[in-house]
Image 1 (cartoon, helix red, strand yellow):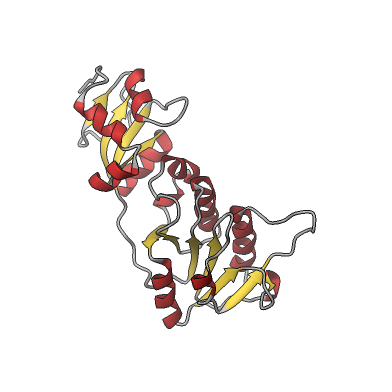
Image 2: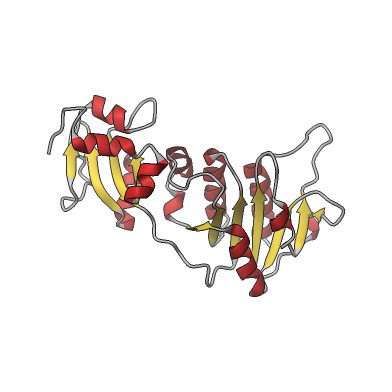
Length: 247
């Protein structure tokens, strides 16, 4: 089906997915680009295929498909230079924490770009899952989706009340490791993680909340030059993930 009108009902609905409110109401989100569409097809979460120009050969003939104009693609997407393909996906299924050994937890991380980098890094170092607190960035924010470069489709991501989820894991003898600088903290290189552990990374400005710190079984810090106040959360996460993945 070809659509040329910017006021078309489908176009208005697709464009509304730029807002979290409408994403949550419909449990759907928009992706852009060939790489993400192919991954969504592979994961069987793609509901609608949208393209400009020639019909892509990899499109699934059984999925509703729409040809649109460049003006429409520009309206429904968020990038300055829109891709020639886009798609509407259903929300990802909520995975279980059971049998996950190495877990990353994000406490109040606000920047979706940082979140995307952390997801890619966790996948690169073979972490099993990521817990994202309710007060962190939106899981279906377009900047986050783009910055993961598809990694969000290949690692289990759980969103919810971080305190409750960490308390649950602590009861099952998981180590809860927090990155914080206080008198009880040790150099991250001096700590050898247990078989099952959660590495918690905190808010860009405020760090990890007190209630989460109080759950910790181990506090660590990364030694840095006195010329620098702190590290970006995604950088700190990468340093720890790389080091602990080898232990």
